[in-house]
Image 1 (tube, helix red, strand yellow):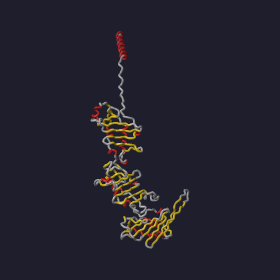
Image 2 (cartoon, one colour):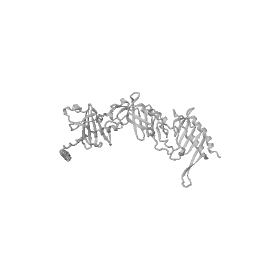
Image 3 (tube, helix red, strand yellow):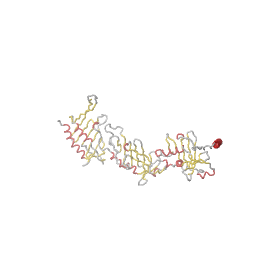
Image 4 (spheres, rainbow, N blue to C red):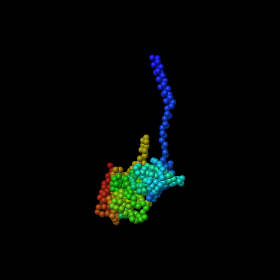
Length: 470
């Protein structure tokens, strides 16, 4: 038994000794391989480092900074798609290869680099020039071959770089000319060969009482003073009936026209200037290109393009549809009095206003109105009805000829603001159905006889009600 235990002990000692020997003499593990990171970017540039970039191929396109904004030399600035210019600039400054390899110079033609498709040349602020050459597309992958000036190696780059560097003038032209919010119109001018010019402007002196009703004035074609505009019939001149007037290029026709006469733009047959609070555009129109399109260019520009006629059908609008038809627009708070006369009848309507301080813990000042008709105090509501009858007369059409007749009804409005001249409206016999409306001495509208006669008929009854004693 004792001998058996001794054998076991010897065996265990031998195993331990073998283990120690193996540990001491074990092979050292090979180190994990480390990946070598190669930076294949061509340079470290920012957009501010570049002052000019050239794309030289069958066209030479020059991108240059002007007042901190990139432009395409030779293109009308308003027609340049800035996002496309920025794309090319950013592709150049971020140019990074996917692979690099050496090629015998005799074999550069295999990669389209013996005669590059495009030479891309950047002039930097420090006066240096960075140049790369664009070759063919890789036959099996979305890559292009490129070389850099002074470097014999050939590189492959992602296809997005090659696509941007192959841009032509057409890629830098924008199609959308302007989106004008007609609900916030600031200026509109339209001219056609067969129509009088139409012009609408923002009223520089709107009334604090009319709540924006007098925001726009029609200054052409009407001579009548203070003609208010209401540009709200959008469905007649916008594509979708919304308030947005969309102006867009159909086709670019001629970048540098030698003879504008062939497009009818040497003496433009029409023009459209339109502006909202953020955007403005001024277009000139020439001959019809076909039944659907007309030749056009920017005022002050040189490129000829075409535009769909249905985008500019606003030119065909009758300005009378934009006219606020009331012969005069003023609420009673602006008026100190009204004189009204017809036949041998004459009435004076006057309003006296007095500031009164109300008593109480929080005294407030209010205006107290006292109404008079021919010197006699009148009730407020009938008086206001008379004023509403007089001010609520709308014209119906444009006059054909000015009549040589005496007015049958004359209304003179006097203002609280004494710096304003009295506003005079007269109605003259025109034909059996119409009166001519002479407004501040200008006669260019007609109004239904029925409307005027009804007003004349109703006023005496309202005056009796207004001045009747209780």
